[in-house]
Image 1 (tube, rainbow, N blue to C red):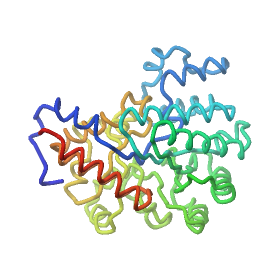
Image 2: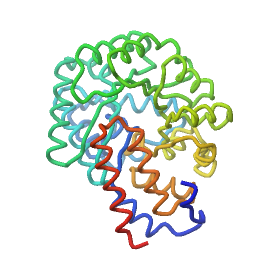
Image 3: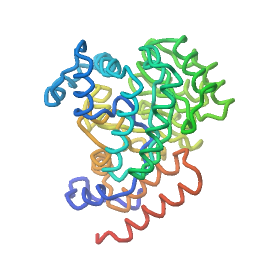
Image 4: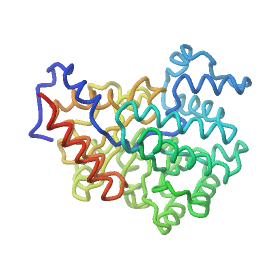
Amino acid sequence: MSGHRQPPEAPLTDLTAFIAALPKAELHVHHVGSASPRIVAELAARHPDTSVPKDPEALAEYFVFRDFAHFIELYISVVDLIREAEDIRLLTYEVARDLARQQVRYAELTVTPHTSVKRGIPDVAFMEAIEDARTAAERDFGVVLRWCFDIPGELGLPAAEETARMACELRPEGLVSFGLGGPEIGWPRPQFKPYFDRAIAEGLHSVPHAGETTGPETVRDALTALRAERIGHGISAARDPELMALLAERGIPLEVCPTSNVATRAVSSLAEHPLPALVAAGVTVTVNTDDPPMFGTDLNNEYAVAARLLGLDAAGVAALAKNAVAASFLDGTGKARLNEEIDAHLAAWPG
């Protein structure tokens, strides 16, 4: 992307329009965390025993996080609203609708089945609900969805065992990868190795979170113990030049979520975000939203943020979009088609 830069202070008005119409892939976006205020409020009204506000406007104030631990606490309160299979289907279908509005053609949604099954949704019903929504979304919106089944790290090894069981024994058609989320502090990556080994043996890709709120050593653990093919966040790698060189050499992409990092206090401000340092070191980065409504963002905004931080013009933004396509687990035909769409959009752009 180094050949496609513009001064950081350059106006983004035209570039914003380019981004809004740019065909995209998203690789790090959480299923429940993508619930729009309208859907969260509707679910809260269905389940009146919740602490989550039932007014969409009040949700903006509710989703102001003191720190990462507070974010996890509030995230779990929203997870608790998903209590029936129809809640799952509605949420998934509406997430796809929102992705389509942003010209997202392909998304790998991080799904945490254990938390829903623990709350009483039968595991088979959960799988049927997400698959029904996936096929409907592709038919109705043209959005291809795939799943990453995610261990909720804060629930420990029993949750890891259950997540691995569901991934390997009930494997839905859309499942492509196996992940690990939740807090990193107090939950070292190596303890989850047996569950990743099982998932990898079943042909799933390894995409754990690491280096979001901890140091570079967590990223190294994800690479060595969990055999990560992509890293969720991974931004602390910027503190370790040798680790950045290793990521660049191995071609391990990072799923970077700038606004999320500021909202959860993982980074003090966008001006201090390590994205430019990672790119300068040759690390492959993709741009993502994490939990967009909770952070008051969407993928178009994250591309605009990245363009500002990296000083990119339209060609640079298109190259960034292609990073996500290359790093995705979409099949070769799908990757070629999406890259052609990105190229066509850039070629038609008047700038």
